[in-house]
Length: 422
Image 1 (cartoon, rainbow, N blue to C red):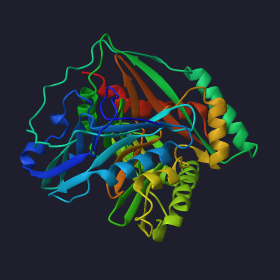
Image 2 (image 1 turned 60 degrees about the horizontal axis):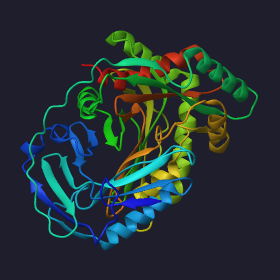
Image 3 (image 1 turned 30 degrees about the horizontal axis):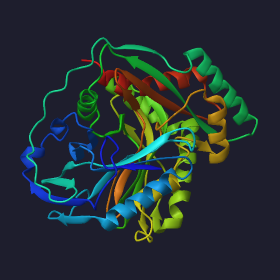
């Protein structure tokens, strides 16, 4: 585990001092439009949420203890912090943003405290300033306009289409042999521009095009996820489970018929049931009561439709278990790993043919009380300079068809792929 107080990695000195004050809601009308280029972070849905920039403190962790190490660091950081919160809403006061690796190895994870956080919830807006020692309330104004990526080209990642379909066929054979019930297999796509890409460009496009998703960015991992792994707020916990997908055609009548087909599909209902069961089983030890709907609904997004279920509960251990610890308990759910979890993740490591890094890992934010929101880093990509690595995964069950799964993966590349265009 490594910690630092600045992007350059200087050792921290003294406790963090945070101050949250109200902000004119008009100034926070476009949160994504406020982002400068300095270490931006985002968590946005339907125009509300949190954005931040600068680095007041951070911790980087890895391996099997990555969640525990980050949890310990955050507990120590918040215990020492001096906080003045004049708003007292979820997301005010001292807040950290995190992005965690999918697997124990390889992959690194990060929890970062921005120097400035601007948030909006309904008609309430605020700005939080974090530093060490005396701090001043910053001026909040729209940032400069990002330039679009130039001359972007796309190429296969670790596996081309044919090789990936053969991996899917291998997984289907193992499922039919009784080795496991479901496995989620992902593939990657590499986008290269002629010059470094400003992440604010795709973030703006994603927030505009996919308002029902959570548009996120932490330390180079960005996307617009439709799946909330866990939200904990004032004793209530919720999780949105997605599994079972069909591509939209753009024709409303045709899409309604496809939605009905999806809702009746035994293959997709089976895949969805595994995912819901894994989430409910993981949350149950932490809840005094739970609500698990008997049947899913169809979530309509611009590019695809999903079977979706919202699981809710009342937590009884909020004083000792944070939202990040709940995310750890839920990860990896059957929606991104498979069933049984251990067998599925071992098979992913054996046959998927690529390193996921932080793809399909928890991403989100947490405040000093442990409340927060953690999504699953889906419809996502990593950005490094002029190179973007896009990810897409598909749930494989007994009657999965490799060509259909390839088409589904291509559909799931669309949000980030389109966001990289002018």
